[in-house]
Image (cartoon, rainbow, N blue to C red; front, side, top):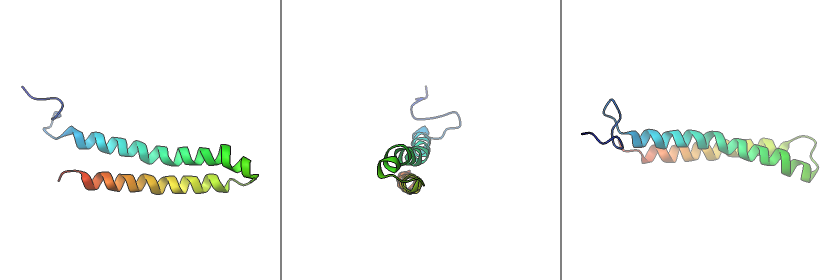
Amino acid sequence: MSDPKKRNGDGGNTQPMLRLASAGFELASFPLLLGAMGYYWLDPWMGNETPYIAIAGVLVGFCLGFYRLILMVNQLPS
């Protein structure tokens, strides 16, 4: 009997795929979270009419998301 925890239908390991799916979630959530925090909290608090901090938060979020994605891909077994 095969262990569903270790194998999927085509015989590949599902653990790396689940880790990459979580990396995709992080890639999407970091920019959204940091951009929203800048737009709704920091920009009004600092009195900015143009959402400079929100734009910077989105850019920093993408950098963090890609950094985490690269770390996870490098840790995958070959």
